[in-house]
Length: 310
Image 1: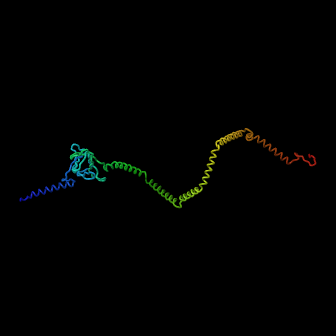
Image 2: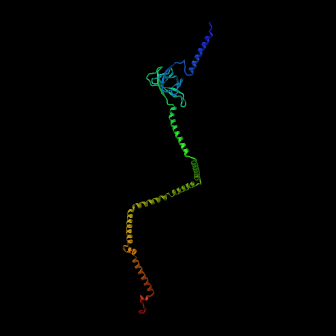
Image 3: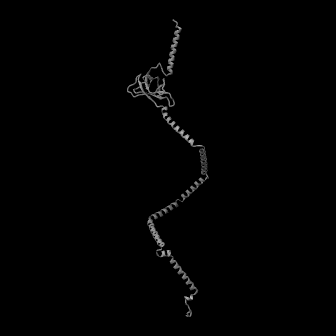
């Protein structure tokens, strides 16, 4: 038996080592060199962080991986992604490959198969439809921009407010807050049992109870007022007022005549000669009465025996 040379043994071991390394490298990348596969291509404008060896999922189950990502040599705006799938995966026509995040908080991207409706099926080597999903970053991006604007305005507002609230204003606010605290404490004490407001509420409740007990009397009083109101409504108040106006007009005219000296009353009031004559007459009458009292025999002659005195 021919003895194997040392060089042949070294070469054989080297081949086995290289094979194991290739298998291990592919194993780490998720590639099985002993399992039959199909290869498809997808063209994107932006792979959004998708990397080689990224997983391909169908209904949440891993069915392949990304084998290669490269630029289109004729157009660098196009990125060609090569996808290797298990050969038992049948893709209907119109199937798309969606780039999506593996989770809401993760930046790891994966491909998800969205099966088409046919008719027919894709064959290995076909180019599939590309699709991208709006991730959490895409959703938060516009909100982040608006939040930054709002925070900037809020910062400016706080700076302006800080300029307005100088030391004296702050001290004044502190004093005002202290006064409000004292007022709140006083209000709390007033509302407490035995406080002024509590007593007022108690008195109000007493008054309400009294009014409730006098409900029948109040009802009767209101009925009487209603009857008086009905009587006043039936009475011709307007006619009475018109007559009163006429009387006042006549009285004004009479007073005006008296003031101007017209008529007997006017002459008595306005003409002093009548007053003087009347005064003289009264003085003469008074003198006559005095003389009659002092010398009655001058005016009355009386005799028991019928003799006349001279």
